[in-house]
Length: 197
Image 1: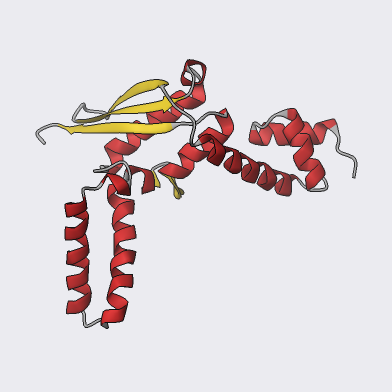
Image 2 (image 1 turned 180 degrees about the vertical axis):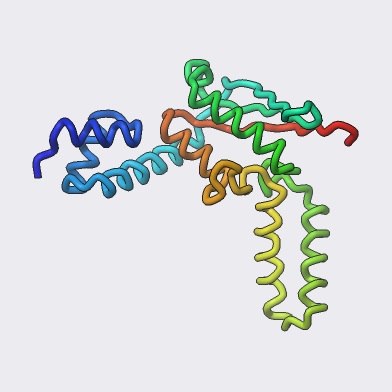
C-alpha cells in the first residue's frame, strides 16, 4: 500500500511523532492508522526505558495551591536540559504532578522509599488479618503481597492512579512524557502542606 502525505500528516497530528517516524510506522502497519499509533507507542516506551539511566540535573520546582489556600504542594521535577524544562509539555506535567500530590495525599515517592520498619509493620498487620480470617498458611504470604501492592497504590506517588485518567498510573504519565520529549524525566521529591496539619 502506498503511504500518502495526508496519512503521515494525520498520524503526526494524532501522536506528535516526527514525520519519518510516522512514515515508518505506517509502512510497518500497512497503512493501518490504529496499528501505526500502537507501533509508535511501543517504540516510544522502549525509547523511554533506554533514557531512564541518563542524568537529569535540570528541571523546575512547581508549586500548586488549591482554591481557598488551605492545601498546597511543592515538587521537584528534573530533566536533562533546561530547553526541555521550559517546554509547555514539561511544565504541564509538573503542574499535574503537584495537583496529584495535593489531591491524592501520597506519603512516599516509590515503594523503595518506605522505611523497612514501616513496611514490616504493614506486612504483620496483613498477615494477622489473613490468619484471623482463617486463611491457610500457604496462602497467607500471597494475600500479604497482594494487599501490599494495593497499599503501594495508595501511599506511593508513582504507583497511584493518575487523577486525570485513572486507567494510568503517575509512572505511566511520566514515561509517556519521556517518550514524547526524548529526555529522561525524574520526579525527585515532593512536599504537601495542609493548613493546621
